[in-house]
Image 1 (spheres, rainbow, N blue to C red):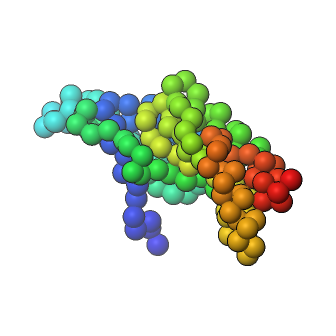
Image 2: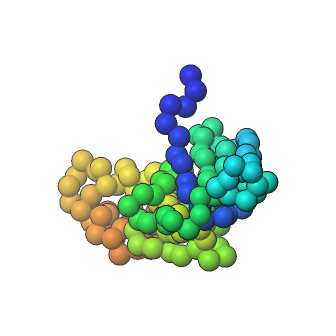
Length: 159
């Protein structure tokens, strides 16, 4: 079955550059189609209108829609990371060249899109059956920018 719901991203005029960036950051990423404005507009004829791309098999659309709308933190994309190495890699790539770190594993990339870079271990610690361990892990997470698996585990263990 084709993907029923697709994430649609509105850019001013950087849709193609953003899609190229995202497909370079994430392995298993690829651009699948580029559509251009016709002389019917509203963009300049021949300029990129819409870029279709995939990340890990999930479809995304990037539109050059003009400056009317900007990304904000109300919507973010969460990346499930197997370990600290993956957290570090995605954090470094997504904050490079104009991106910005944020609190609790959140960041903004150079296009202003918000991401949550989340180690799987954090999810496990926050759901720990011992509420005190979960509380300590949560308290530690709330003090971090990029999430640190070893520090989260140490906090949960009260070390």
